[in-house]
Image (cartoon, rainbow, N blue to C red):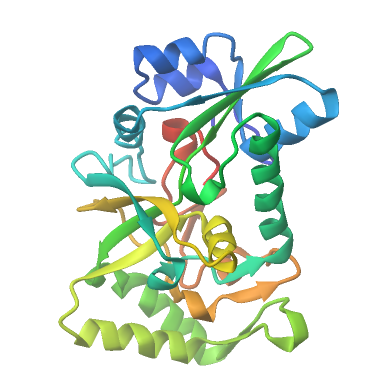
Length: 289
């Protein structure tokens, strides 16, 4: 974590951000007045409290793809450097999720972000949005925040083997994961998830579509009965960070599970706020994903 970042909230010094990504001349111009890159949620709250004017600009798809290609994982590998990257509409139910849950509170935050963009003059849902940059100035300090569509990776099924073995070892002593779900719906039988992946491994299926970032936005789109605009990445060099679960197995919770191992099944922690398969999306794409 660099000196420009804060663990409790994403805050990156602009010079650190620009040095970690590829910025087109247009994007550099948009960032001229920005001192810090922060999360969109924080910028929403900051601008609302201070009544500060927010400017929003579109980011060209090719420019944003160039940014994503600079994303490195915990090994230092440029995992999307040679990948096929496109933006497309996709249904959440067709994906598997690294998250085990969807929080009612976080879903409500997505509706608040929709309202934020509406107040700023953008009358569309995040379900149909491409990449955006929002900027504002508060007490002489410039802040910028990126909106990035959900990220979907097409992963080769064999990459599941290591996290699946870790989940199998966990299931021996803890067959049921208990999450803070509504009406006692938070029980997750781990063996069912393991069996699901064994069926995939035994099948002729080669790739699995996994939601890397954006569970709550995708779930919000599902509640609205619509697909969502997403960044789909094929031929990625990234690892599977954990054992993904089917969308229909997500637990609806009243709060975020405290333990990372309850949010991500079969995850291997390798450092503070880092785990196997972790990708630095903050430095590359300006998002706390």
